[in-house]
Image (cartoon, rainbow, N blue to C red; front, side, top):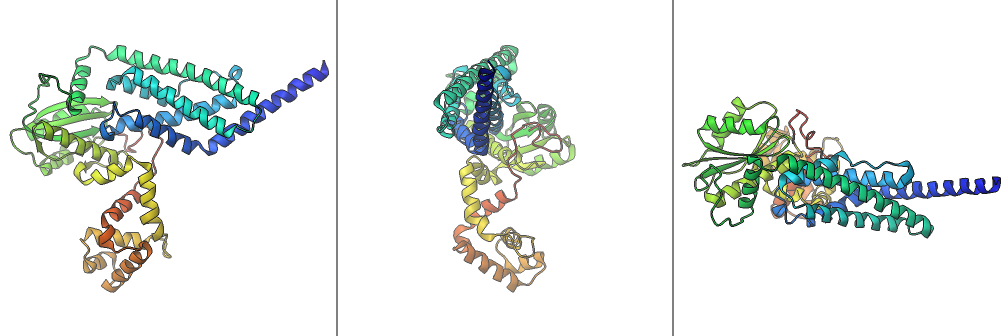
Length: 413
């Protein structure tokens, strides 16, 4: 009996060490796993997100993925009889967000099933040298954890759907989403807003952004279409018979808007197609605003940066090509990058740049030549890419994706 108990103890120790070793390897690849899952989910979001135009939804996807990966690793590390799986808060939040957005539950399930299979592939890749029976037990446990998780996700989805179904605000959101996607309704839905007018698209984040949008419309004497999208996020359009100057809107924002509200602004555009375009511009501004909180951002000035931010591979390619070669300068103030930013901001004027930098013109010209040597190209040939790379370099690292913590001032992004 003593020998049998000793064998059982050794077996348990062996199983535990296998699980710990496997999780250790998987944690080292956690970033790679999350990126692979995000790419997969993004490819399966084509029905939901048109050209990546819904940054809060995609950011929520990334946060949910990070939470799910950590929950799965915990599940693997601890046998099923020692671990009661709970749905990660990020996944529950995203399930409710999907319900509010009107995402088909079949699409939600399909994404989770595809994600579970992808994680299983990583597990088999890292556990290929383990005893087959042990790896099988781990995969069976992972599948059981997934069943519980998926049931919880669908429950969160259905609870939220039951809460909002029939609300006039939900019908408005569905109608707006359909019009933005170019759906033909036969007869356009009545939004209480003139789609043939001039429009200025806005995305507002913060405390009660829909109230702030209504106040802004009143202050500039425009009709408003306001659509609450998420906790602390609202889409809005200001409409009227004439073109609205953005400078007038910015003045009102500075003078009257609550300090915790941030606004991304499109350009003034006419007609229903202009209504769509100005909204996409505002969303581009929000994409950048989520990474670098600011009071007001003009979407048309952020389009290139927003497009790159949707692809982590492009972000890294620009960094390797245009930032890494510049390196860290001897004076530890990243002189070359500072010189470039100043040079571009003055339209390539070496004299003005020198005055702003507190050096002479020859020093600026020498630095520019050194930059061109390091990059292997003349500035005019790569200026657009270099300017985007420099702007990316100033953004803080991508956070965990908590939409309520994107703004340190408390604005719920």
